[in-house]
Image (cartoon, rainbow, N blue to C red; front, side):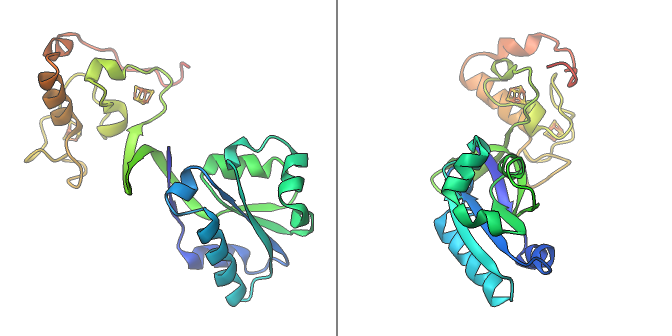
Length: 204
Ligand code: SF4
Ligand code: SF4
């Protein structure tokens, strides 16, 4: 799941203030699940913008903003989008970028895209994968140090953690403590014997 959060409303308003006709597109997948782009949020955004004096000419929730495949599909989904002078997309950056391929007006993001994560119940889990293109997560018991250790260390901890928390971001658990505990639990501490080369992020 792509993890996104809503931009502050004032920031969105500032982007759209001088636009004549704004169309809003949400996304029924990740954004809807996180309550930043489903039906209720599109309706609320439409009403807030209208109350603030922005001319909103319509709103719709795409099945998946990142999977809209053609201009024809978009026009069928949102016929009066043809009259829009700006489109506000309540999805992730990928969905916003994809929608921009099909409309020849300004396209604005309502959300900030943060990471590749997950959701359990209503709990959002950030930074589970950094999309490095060379997945070696099995070497670490399923906990990715490239995504979860700010120093992206592949061969053990930096030694700076305090009480299990990361020295770079004390809000977060030290990824390497989690990796060690996990490997111990599943009886795979032997995986730590191997020295791992740094990843070349340019190689895909
Ligand atoms: S190694 Fe980590 S960052 Fe790379 S693809 Fe696997 S989970 Fe994602
Ligand atoms: S404290 Fe842990 S998670 Fe933080 S940078 Fe060091 S090894 Fe990585």
